[in-house]
Length: 363
Ligand SMILES: Nc1ncnc2c1ncn2[C@@H]1O[C@H](COP(=O)(O)OP(=O)(O)OP(=O)(O)O)[C@@H](O)[C@H]1O
Ligand SMILES: [Mg+2]
Image: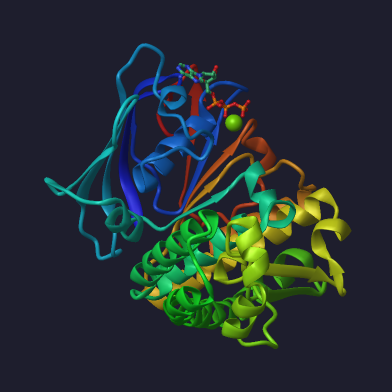
């Protein structure tokens, strides 16, 4: 997957720009507030119809404009074809996605554009709630198994209905058993897919960790969302009174989590800031490597302020991992000279300098 041409209109301080990125490494540099992150945000809109910085379109869309439009020529299956994709995000109402002249839905778009973002929010993979790690995990399962999306939607539906009944107290033990049969069937399948995915991810993760962090021992574990030594039906039955009191289901895949440990200690408590950046980046890079192995096509990486938190040796290792992958990378930094020395002379690098929301020609 790569973007060969990108046009952005009315997004933050960008009124209208158009440029042809490299299919390998793109460096976007410029002063604070020039619009570097906004370019990454635009690519995120192209792949997911939304920003990674805000849920509110009015913050994303340029002041006094009605909508932002991102348009690109893409090669989704990396077969040498160019196809046109456009996403319009209005201040009010739904986003519109056009692919090769027809409307497509969000899950088709997500399948088309496998995006990975590494920015300051990525630290949440270690420091944030389990929901952040489940979202990371489910990105992988979504792209690894066609069955996942239907399964996940089915599970959310049953969970929502079970929680509604618990909240209004309209459920007794007998009715609970009827609902739990469906809940457990979805839970078992969902959990099996998550475990299978993590099994495949682990060796990729170990490889990237050893490239970025040497021989540091970082273990990736999985917590089901309930005590795995017990059957889920038994757990749901014994927690029923508590679920009723709380008005929601306290155990199940909606509580699943990824556990990261360093030498047996909780990684979030143990690691330095730079080490955390390398570990969360390793998770994202491993996911891209596995995606490439399973689907035969690379991901797009949006990496905001790559040099921040990293010393020069680790910055160089990070760049080496990126250039050895076949991903298309969009990397922002204030000063590109901080990265210049790290690239191999053969690597296809395009550098774009941005000032006041406008872009100069590739250098
Ligand atoms: N809705 C909007 N309409 C117009 N301008 C906006 C809007 N939202 C933000 N801006 C401006 O757009 C610019 C966005 O900059 P952006 O965050 O992309 O900068 P950056 O180059 O990544 O800077 P930094 O190096 O500080 O991270 C800022 O100058 C900001 O004030
Ligand atoms: Mg920025």
